[in-house]
View 1 (cartoon, rainbow, N blue to C red):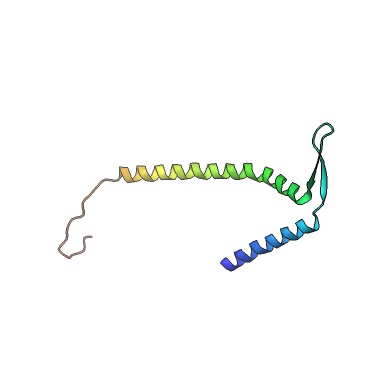
View 2 (tube, rainbow, N blue to C red):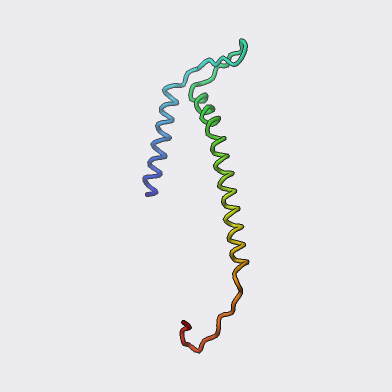
Amino acid sequence: MQFLKTLLWVLIAVLIALFSVRNWFDVTVNLWSDIQADIKLPILLFVVFLIGFLPTWSLMRTRIWGHRRRIEAMERNRVASMPAHDDPVSDGEPVI
């Protein structure tokens, strides 16, 4: 299964590299007023991807962090509320 996962990531990397090589030309972006910026197309797509991905990813990470904190607190409360009991020492007989 690890081989298939690695193969998938290599395939995605090769496709991105091929796309970047084939589309490596300048794109003019009109910023505001009469200011224009020339940027390579793959870099522009990467920046736009990050602008859309990073807020979603950070929201997911904060929710996971909050859920883990809640689970750890519940586990601590469960362990603290369990009565401490000593196991009786048996003479070799199983206690039922």
